[in-house]
Image 1 (cartoon, one colour):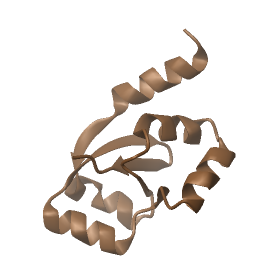
Image 2: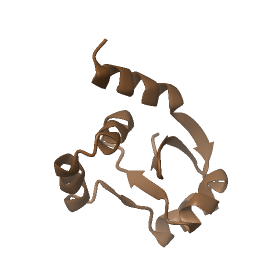
Image 3: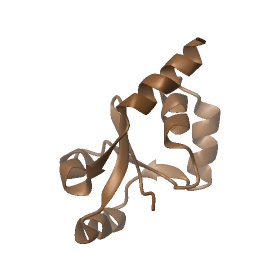
Amino acid sequence: MEQQELLRAKLNGETSRMQWTELQRFFASGAVIAVSHELDLVEVAACIANDDTKAIAQWMAESRVGRVSDAQASAWLEADAALWAVVVKPWILVQEKD
């Protein structure tokens, strides 16, 4: 299996649903990154792990990847939201899916 496939498989296995309340302390330290629902969370995580600055910069410019805003954090807290999450140190990537 190719190294990229191994990385994606590892990240996929580490992805789980988490309550926003469990992630708040990481948000407070600035470590939580929101990933738009139209992107593949594992693909974004792999790009970050591989330091693919071109892809990340494009997604950020399109507002599809970025730090969680205070407004979004408040909305998730109020809704008691469960999000998909995966860790790519030092970041925790989160994604809201229906």
